[in-house]
Length: 184
Image (cartoon, helix red, strand yellow):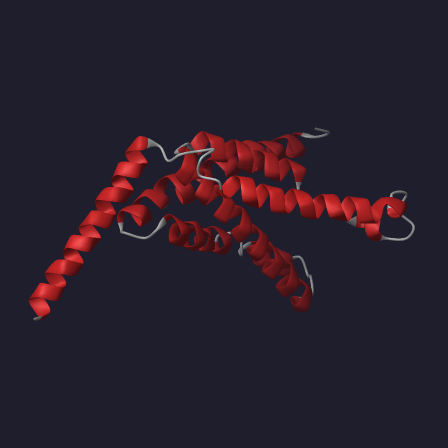
């Protein structure tokens, strides 16, 4: 880092923010959502919405810095979408691994890497001639990640979490039975 400010910013971006966000949005939110009877898929899609909304405050900073409203809305919407996508991945990874540390490290890595650089599709870029190969690699990598990540054989649920989900499903089933009997 070139300055003290940059050092603190890196500490925030790569250690403090990932750790606190993962503890809150995965460690504190996901177990109660699973215990409520929601499925793993429902939790993996619901919890990231809170994570995405938590990043919308950056719009206020942009507006305060004088950026145009249309630009701020576009950037904020894009940021909401990609934070929700990452949040969905991190939620599912947390459910599968049971490890806040693992998703924190993944979060730090993603913050460090940033979004994919697609500037090679511009004619003047030195890698322009390889754009078809590079874009194909991005697509193959994305689909391979999705296919391998969803394979439950590679990463079975941690035993305590599996028991908790099974218990919540049994409780939901018995509550449905009681409610049906009470309505007759």
